[in-house]
Structure formats: C-alpha cells, structure tokens
Length: 137
Image (cartoon, rainbow, N blue to C red; front, side):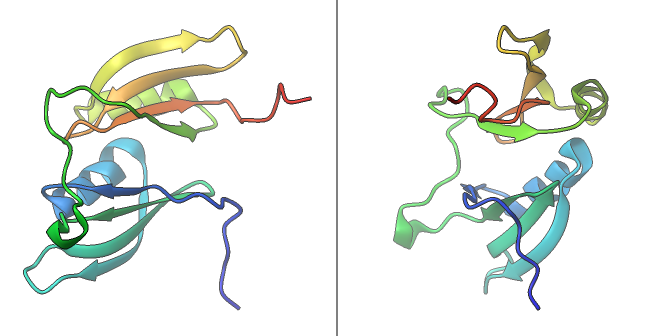
C-alpha cells in the first residue's frame, strides 16, 4: 500500500540550483528528502521533500514550461506557510544554518507564534504553530 499524506496541496518550487536548495532546505528547515529524480544535465527534474505531513516539490528551471527561479531582490507575492510544533526551536535551527530571518518570532493576534525566513534563493517561508481552520465557523 502506498503511503498518502493528508495534505492535498503540494507547492512546486523552481530553484536555479535545485540540488543546493534541497540540501539547504533539509539542513536549515528540517525537510526530509523523499524522492529525487535527476534530469539529463545533472539538475533535478522532480523531487519531494517532507516536513511533518506536508510536502514541497523542488526542481531545476524548466524553460519549456516557463518555470524559472525567483529573481533576487524583486520582492515576492507569496509566502509558504508551514506548521511546526515548536516555532522557537525551528527559528533557532534556521538561524544557526544561516537563514535570513525576515520577521523575528512574534505572537500573532490570531493566536499563532511564528517567524518568517528567506531561503538561499529568496523564497519566503512562514513557520508557526498555527493550523488553518481554528477560526472558521
């Protein structure tokens, strides 16, 4: 039987150096490599990284699909939000690994505690103990 994770949304991120990004995401943020599919030029065609019950997919650029790496210093219109049990410990791990902390730990008005970091190519990640749905009626 194939293991299935409870999430039905799997972000797919494109990095200029996908192999370095995978290594860094595992070290700094605690992701675990689950699958790496190399492409013919030594890059990454597809990968799956797991943190808790969530998965992100990482690949090298795919010009034929107009998939490119983020543009440094261009700002961002998105943030990947990830639930972690202990935001303080996660923050310490990320900081020790050299993550750029964009927003220090904060207790949010809606009951969460979290922080925001940028990874080695500029993607923004918000790690907190929040689970969506708490305030839904």
